[in-house]
Length: 433
Image 1 (tube, rainbow, N blue to C red):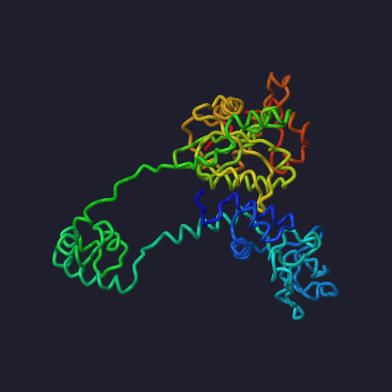
Image 2: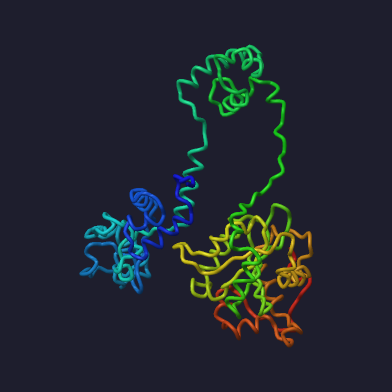
């Protein structure tokens, strides 16, 4: 019989979400997950997210008098004059209206405590509670991290140890000597005692240990560890299988162009069939920065367009791409795309993006810093690269092909524009930074 883990895993949280959306009871979900039903109940109730969102065609409004409300123009905003307060999206009227009474949904006080399966959700303007596995998992990890940080020692113990250590340190004894001569009284390791002194738990400080003050902290090379679990089910062989099962599906190759080490970088999203490459400036080469850029794209384009443009994303195994679920799923846990990884040290598996980077490097040669760049500069580079005609496209530009496939509206949302062929610049004079 296998070991039964006490903590819920991320996969189990997705199972809970699917069970809630299908209208399953806590007992039914618990049977699938293999936990007690009270565990599921506590998980949902404690990790649900409250959202002040309206519904289709209606703004958020949780006033109990909203249906018969005739008030208008209560707030000083000049744009609100003459408008009905119950349709206001800025929610300032609630603070200024003497008749405002907040209404709570009574269904949230009983199981399942969330709106995931509520039939009234699409026409409800009250505050909603949603169980989202991504948010729940992040909150769980943060709680786990917080519980393991700090010192596991109470105030009385600190006073006892301080009475032993501080007087001897101030007499000039070394902490090593104190720990050796008082091992039966301290009963802690020397390393722990150094940590306690360094964290100012005692009256003595590092200044009372001359050698500690004289030594400098050694510089450590910053290393990034990528959890290999993120590659499971997303390997290059999985990518080939998925493409074979979905013939004709569009593929976008994602990569980064590095500037100065530790500085800004450019995130690139290359549409293989169209030879078109979107470029976004990121402040650092981290998973958080990449996630932020992808979230910006999703919010700017809208969920439907995002899912249409990026059905499959192929990238390398760099640490900046180590959070695939943040790219695949939106804030409510809805799957929008699939992320796959090339094999280690096999950059040719996404060769289309690598080749297109050579045109970008004509403008910003390798070794250049992007620290003085803004997104507007990167957009200018993107426009010139994508407006340049290619023989492989029958001398058409990638932008022209993109417009004929998806329309011009998407480019406008991203601030992109087609540059006339004779005005295209592909050398460093385009951006003088």
